[in-house]
Each structure stands twice: as structure tokens, then as C-alpha cells.
Image: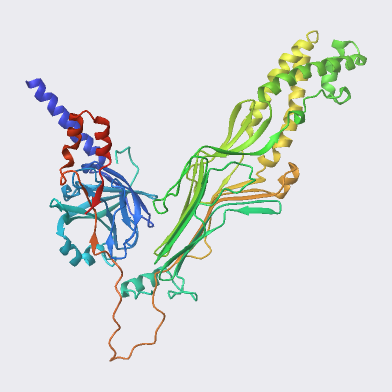
Length: 190
Length: 421
């Protein structure tokens, strides 16, 4: 029994250690010198690794993710990482019975890290907060979430939630502060 | 439609683009980009893939063919050409390039617009074995020290002609194995994909090029010898230097080996040291001839520039992923036409954010005009619902399995349509 317990502890240690390899506390970051288009989103704690493509608003002001449920959309009207101010807005699908790229976005907690792949390198963010808004609340708060005259080049991730059997009634919004370009000091998992 | 800027934005632009006009251009265009996948000019004849141009004057307008047909009559077989451009308020981007058969086109904006395909190759120049100097030097041109060495062996200079006959026979024996080893020799440029990209965002231009599996190789007799490997992500304005020393080494090694075998057989009766000296003499002649043939390339008269970048203005950029030129001196030396080829040429910017024309100062009492707000989302439609549960179709596979129609059930399951929430 004690052997099993020891084995379990080793597995847990390996697992936790493996996660720590993703983003070490001693990671060093450099400021971005120029804007760079996001091409890939990596959220280790959600096991989310997906390509990023640009998307636009439709005529009704609705932001639609890419058709492919495994691909993340970068709203072209938002800033690119490294731009002066503003915020980078990404959105991806939630599929209520699984398979959407952002199915588990609402599980992100403050302090967890997110990486955006760009031509300039991998830009790392730290989650500030996660909130859930009804559709009406999101419409009312759209300047705070989407406008580009504030934000300090933070990252905003949005998807749907609140499946009521027929429709999604809410949005999950994650705000993350940019830490900078991660310096290439060692091989990392993200 | 022109939108009124926020004061903060105007101040930011003024700081970034000192002295540049922030109002729309005369034609109303504030943002632009263009992309040309391929331009090849051979002598006076040029052909290109056309150009895609994007402009923004309140609305984006894109003209040109984004996946043009492959130009006919080229010296290489290309698989895919793509050239894409976009221009929006305050941002422009373009991407263009070529890939081999099987390559794919990706929507612009994700950092790339091409996926590599099969390798494309095109001959730069042929090397002739006949021109390598594989013939016996005239006896009266042999260096004095070699003649001095031969004379005591052959008991008199009058027998040197006999030696020459033996050398000729030996060289004939050498030429056959060399041709068998190398066949038709040629220097070949090859690549899987070449692509140039540029963007201007917030007045800051940037550009890059990516080159997949590209280089120059020596081919012949089924062999391939790398000569130059091109970097996958070259820094701006990378000049490619064609270092052909490896080619020389390989050819000279083969010639030397064959000469040793051939001469040792034909001149078995001649002193070994003399044969060695004669062999060295012949190899030196081959080296001279090879270097003459390769000189135009070795001296960089074939000019290849990767990720060629220019800045026409502080807020615009032009990028050409690969620019190859056969310069006039080289063209004359290798009897080739003048060639100027550009792959993946793009231009971005200027890309200003639209601001209103300078207007007279308002009357103090006048109320400020209502400021148009930037267009931002009011909703995010990011939910997708499977239909199977709510329509009771979750039991379908089990039911179909139960009646032994597994295949039909699987098809029905995979064909379930989804709808957006």
C-alpha cells in the first residue's frame, strides 16, 4: 500500500513538475519592440493549443469566431501584441457537447499564464480576472471590453457559455496582462 | 466613411508620424498594400503574375487575382502562386509567394499565406566535362621540371611524343568513368516555397520572408551535392554568397582518383614519381578550367538577395522574398541572357488612421459635432450546439447498431449538423 502511495506521489510530483516546465517562475521577459500578428494561442492549464486567424465584425457588429471550431479568431479591429496601448481580442467557439477550442475558458484563474505565438516570438500574459456576462451585460460593457483607447495592450479572450438547452445565454471574458516576449533561455513546453 | 478620431489617437499619431500628413490623401485613400507573387524578366521579355492591390478610403477595395495562373513557358514547374493584400483603417498587410505542386494557400493574416509543396528546381548553369581540360598537355608545354624528370626515364626527349600517346590513352580511360560518375553536370536552384510578407500597423512597417528547403545544388549522374543552403528566415537584405569550394573539391577528387588509376595502368613502365607529377599537372589544368567555368558564380556575379527590404517612406515598406539577378558580366561569361527574377514581392503602407480634414477652429460658443465612435462588437457569437441531444438523436447509433445497420448508423452520426448559438 505504501508503495502505491509513493508511486502516486511520484506521479503527482512529475505532473506538477511537468506543468511547471510550461512557465517557470523565473522566466524572463523582454518588451516587444514592434507589433506582431498573433498566429497561435497556447493555454497550458487548459491544454489549449490552436492556430489564430484574423476575423472581422459582421454588418451587425457581431464578432464571429472562425468557422473551424478548433481555430481561434483575432479581431482585426483590435491591437496586435506589441502595439502601443489598446487590447488584443481573441475569440473561439464553445461547443456545448465538447470539441470547441474555448470550451473550458471559464476555468482560467487569476495568475495563470497564456502565450500568444507571433512572428516576433512568444508573448506571455498573466490572467487578471475571468468574468461571466449575460449577452445584455456584454453589449452594455462593450467599450470596456473592445474599445482600443485603453487596455495597456492586454489580452482579452471571449467565448460563449450558459447553454440552456437551446442557446448560449452568456459570455465568458478573460482579461490578461502582457508580461512580454519570453526570452529563449531553455526549452519549454509552451 | 470617415470616422472622427479620438483626441488621444490624434496625439499618438502625431507623435509617431512627425511631419506626415494625417489627413486623407487627395484620392481619399489612407491605407494601401500590394502583392506580386512572381516577376521574371529574361533579356527583354518579362512576364509576371499580375498584382493584387488593396486600398482603404473608408471602405476596403481589393483588385487583382489572388491565385493567378502559373505563367507558361517558364524554366521551372511551379505549383501554386498566391498574392494577397488587405488595407483597413490604420493597417495594411500583404503576402505573396510561390510553392511547388501540392502547396496550399492560406488566408492572409495568420502570418503566412502559403504552405510548401513539392520541390521546385531550375537550372542555373551547366558544367561541361569536355571543358574541364581533360586532355594531355602538349609536350612542348610541359613544365621544364617535368620534362627533366621524364628525360632520364625515357632516354631522350625524342620519346616524349610516345609518352604523350600513352597519356592520351590514359585520359580516354579516365573520361569514361568520370562521365559515368557525374553524367551531365549542372548547378540547380531548388525550393519548396518562398514567401514575402509585410504589414504596417500604427504607422510602423515591418516585413519578413520565409524560404522553405531552398538552396543551390550540384547535380549529375544521380548525385546531388549541396552548394548553398538558403536560410529559412533570412534577416533583411541577406546577400547569398555562392561558395563553390565544395564543388571544386568533389570534382577534383574524382578527377585525381581516375587519373591515378588510368595513368598507373597506362604508364606502368614509367617511374612512379614522374607519373605522380604528371597527374598533378593534369589535375592543376582541370582546376584552372573548373574555376574558369565557375568564376561568374564564385565572384557573386549571380546576385541573390533574400528578404530584400526598402523603406520608400518612414511609414511604408517593400519586401521581396528572393531577388535573383544574372548580372551583365556573368551573362556574357556563361553565354546566358540577362535575368531578373523576383519572388514574393509585397508593399505595405502608408496606412494612416483616418482623421478629418483640417477644419477651421469652431466658434467658441459652437457645440462640438457629435463624435463618431469606432465600430466595436456588441455581441460575440461563439457558441455551437450539437443537435443530437435536444432532438433525441443521441440514441441513433445504438438503435442502428441494434438493428445491424452499423455502417448506416455511423454515417448518420457523422452527418449530424450543428448550428451556431
